[in-house]
Image 1 (cartoon, helix red, strand yellow):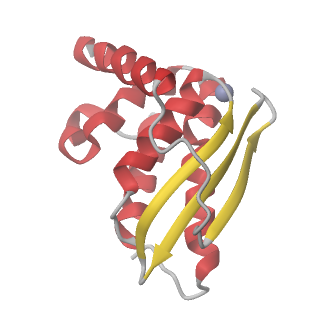
Image 2 (cartoon, rainbow, N blue to C red):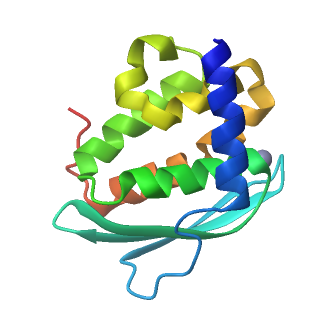
Length: 150
Ligand code: ZN
């Protein structure tokens, strides 16, 4: 777990200091508010969905380092991903931050997302880490009633 701890430091510090895709998006097809009142995290998520593909994604707002780094990393990872791929990553990320799966066994799929595995030891921070992902998940699922995770 030593490597994961280093990755945690590196990814959280980097993305908190230099958040990616941190801006408004005028052409967004979905704009969602996301809040975690327990911590004071508050972001707006912008999604440009075209033909079931996330063509562009951005966010703005403020909150703790974990919530901001998570939103930033999510935005850089999901750009260009299909709805299905995004949903699969959401499920995987959810399982990692809640400690349901061992990140070491899924390093390939997780990539830098593995950095958030340490959050599972701090239940109060799980909401911070999952906030942007949860909002994205809701945005994708309200698009069509027939969407399925299968
Ligand atoms: Zn937070």
